[in-house]
Length: 278
Image (tube, rainbow, N blue to C red; front, side):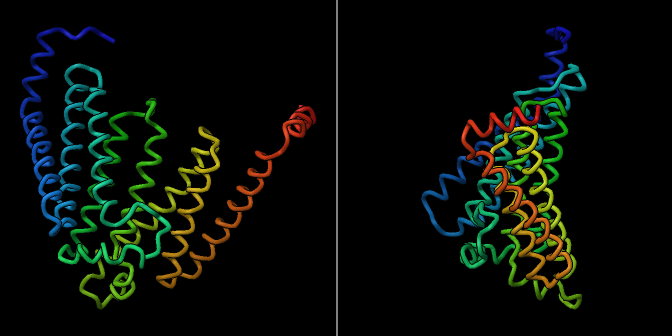
């Protein structure tokens, strides 16, 4: 990596000064809102939604810092990207505190919490979720392919898929997918996005299991996402899609059971199998 001259470093700091001021202002506002939530339990869901939006804005500014560094100094600003990843996580967590982080949670388990978001209409919820997805994509692209954080994005995308599903009022989603509903368009777009995200999260956890961690829990998480996807299809009356996902769910579950049996085999049996293979 080429050495960065003091002049170029100075120009970079000058160029990004405005961004860093905005970052500091958002961080200060975050502290104030969290303090307000601790002091007053009223409208906490609405305050957290505001924090989610601000954390996404914060992430975008950290990405900007790195992009300018890449342009001017010819290298990424890893510190800025790591701060962006942390602020993105905080945004997801603030949303999880309202709508739960569980992808397999029954609607009745978080319906009361979701009711606190009643003033935030369907369109605004959908746009917030789209904004979160854009931030994830931009941050992943800013890191690039050869990054040690590659597999951490599987968890980020999985948690994103869960909150994208859980912020959607599933009771209203059924009626709002009627073309006569005034909320038809944003509901259909949101449902389609959730279906895509659940399927993608399942595949990504399976990929991580096979290529990286080999942890049964990762495979099991992928299967949970398939289960959630099947329930969405079933709820909305998409029987053909639900049946296709069920077949995939069953195949993956059988594979999981086979892998669990292999993992629990006595070491002598594994050694014998290895000799047989080679």
